[in-house]
Image (cartoon, rainbow, N blue to C red; front, side):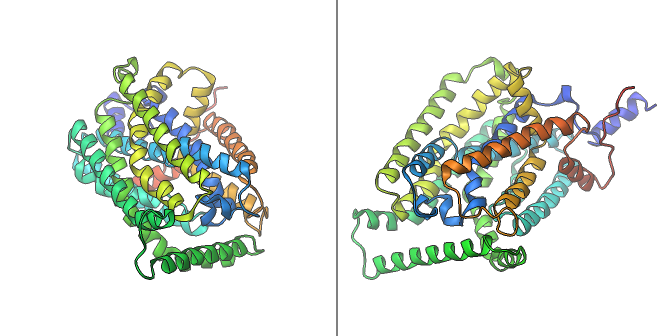
Length: 427
C-alpha cells in the first residue's frame, strides 16, 4: 500500500483524477448545463448549411412563423451565451489545474501539453465531424491566456472585459456598413449595393452546394470539402479567438480567482449585480432579435445582430450567470437535476464530441439522411434526444468509471501514462 508521502507526491503530479469530494461542484453543474444548451445552438449546423445557422429563410421552403419564433427565443436565451459560459469554465479550469502546481513551470508545461492534444482533438473534430468545432479555438486561446496566469483576479476580469468589449465593437464594424445600407440609413457609395448583393448571392450558392454535399450518399466528398475549405475556415477561427475566445477565457480566469465558483461565494454577495446583468443582457438581445424578426431577417442586419452586437450585449449575462448558477449549484448539489447536470459536466468533453458523432449519423445523407429536411421546431426533438443520451450515458458510464472515455484518454496523453479508470466493484 502506498505511503502518505507517496500519495501526496502522486497528487502533486496530478496523477489521479480529482476525487468527488475535492471537485468544484459548481464547475461540473454549469459545464453540464452548458454542454446541453450548446446542442440547441449547434443542431442547425448539423442539420442545414451554414447559412441556416443564423438566417431562418435558408431553411427548406423558407422560414415558417414558428421558425422565426424559435430563432428569436434561441437568440435571446442561448446563442453565444452558453458557448460563452463553456469558455468561461475552460478558463476557470485552466487555473484550477495550474493551482495544483502552484502555477509553477512544470504546471505550465503540462498545461501546454494538454492544450496541444486539445488542438489535435479539435482538428480531428473539425475535419471528420463538424466544421463548427470550438476545441481548436480553446487550445489557441488557452496558450495565449498562459501569459496572464500570474495576474490577480480583478485584473484578469478587467482585462478580459475590456478586451471583449473592444472585440465586440470591432466585430460589429464588419457588418455595420452593409446593415445600414440595407436599412436605408446610409447612402451607398457607387457599386456598394451591387457588391453586397453579389456577396450574398455567393453565400446562398454556397449553401446550395453544402445541401447537395451533406445530403448526398457518400461520406468521402464531405471529408474532401472539409479539407479544401479547412485552411480558410480555421484561419477565421484563429482570428475570432482574439475577438471573443481569449477575452472570455480571461474573464473565466478572473471569476475563478475572485472565488465565483467556490462554496463560500455560494452564500451570496453579488446577487443583485448578477441578476441585473442577466436581465439587462436578455432585454438587449430581445430588442435586437425582435428587430431582425419583424423586418423579416434582412441578411446584413441579421448578421450584425447575430455576430456583431451580441459580442457586447452578451457580456452582462456572462458576468452574472456564473454567479447565479454557481450559487444554485452548491445549494442544489444533492438534488436530481444538479446531480445529473454534474455528471454530464464531468463528461463534457466526451459529450461534446460524442454528440457531434450522433448528429452526423442522424443528419448526413450517407447515414440518417435528414439533412436539410427539418424546421427549427422539429430540430428541438433531436435536441431532446441528444440531451437524453448525454444525461443517461454520463450516469451509466460514471457509475463504472472515474472519468469519461475522452477525458481519460486526454489525461493519459497529457501525462504520457496509462491511468486506471475502472471503479473497483465491491463484492
